[in-house]
Length: 231
Image (cartoon, rainbow, N blue to C red):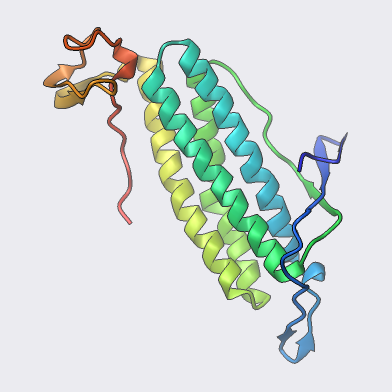
């Protein structure tokens, strides 16, 4: 559901959102012999914060994709929409974990700051890279440690696995930022195989064609060469 209440105070955003699903009851487990109410743990709030953050990230990347489409960079837009879909699924994972451990909640108040920056396509890609870096280096490792300390190994595992994905997102965003900024999205130092995303035409060269010689698609339809870190 969309935010029910949003107010700003001191540059921080207080977001309340309603969770409608009712597929599980509350988790009251023992930790060191003490009965724990999951809704009183820090992990409970960290899951809610993560859900909100991933939803917003997915929307921000959809907006960059919109700008890429308008600029005729279809393959870039498709890449951004795929990453946006990744973020939406991260949000789903956190939502389902929250429901599993806490049950349906009418309202959760989250005190957290979220980015609202934008700019040119290149600038937005740089912002995205910095956001992903913060998630995989600081936010999710911290949330994983807290979850493990509070006895929620399953949640700690999910935070750690999402962090690994976000690390690759940072790598991709930094590459795309540099490529768009320098005008090298469709050129390379060494010959590469360029593939038309419309008809499959392939050609090896240091630079992709301006117009596909087979189907006439523009350069923005050429599949991108993206860097990834191995598992």
